[in-house]
Image 1 (cartoon, rainbow, N blue to C red):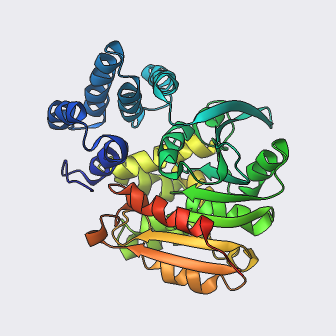
Image 2 (cartoon, helix red, strand yellow):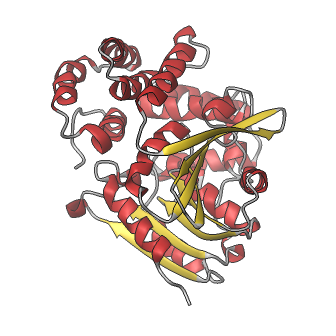
Length: 375
């Protein structure tokens, strides 16, 4: 279940994200947390606390735990920080040393001037295919690990880093809104005539965008819903402030927008991370340029184009996406073959972003949806 480890909301979500799916009942990890949690004061102490424990766990041969700690340590590091590349490399090295939940195959699918990394999780005699990807900040290895919740289904699972994610981003392949492009490349490469798809976090928008234009997708899951990037700003800003910013964007007043955001970012760890991570992902140099790109990520124009079976998941206390969007999206998928919507409340333990704290709930709903018969 989702736990209140610290007062900082962003720190709290990430600790639940990294720990609770796998290690909530692991006594050694829970002991580690007793020394890690009191150290978490800012981005630098966050890195040191997790990195120190990662090194110790790696030396002990606890590769899966070490991988998780290295991923946590890297979370707030700038790409210009010389420690960032080492933390990312250590995260992946330890992950594959410790991963044994599936038989798997690794691929590098040509894309632009580089490649998209893919892990195919093999289910013997599977007759169906499932694409699985994340969004703003997750790496595909995190999604590979979560696939344990899907083990045993009649699907081969293709997990990949798309543009702006993980190893693709580190090649200079930046985030794009028209996600049908990488999905098309993956489907072509593996000669998949039909596949379902699950997009997590920002992937909740990306999967819907792909479905609007790539009709080889038959069932799509927004895990959770993600209506627009501006929602993630509105949910944490006063109405008059976000309204002013939108007016300045419309007036193309880049200077004032940048001044406003730099002032806000100086005193807001969460906003500072969101904007800096966004600029890295998209490949721009200022908040104004980022917000211009953010405007492209919006469900409104694509909803009538989606004609697949759709599952929409949401948490009532999601800190990034207003839960009220669930009813709106459901009602505007007017051409979908079918729509199922689920709102997880606090009592269920699934009320947080992407059911952090009780991920099993989300994946149980996904499995039920994938096996449902739509007539």
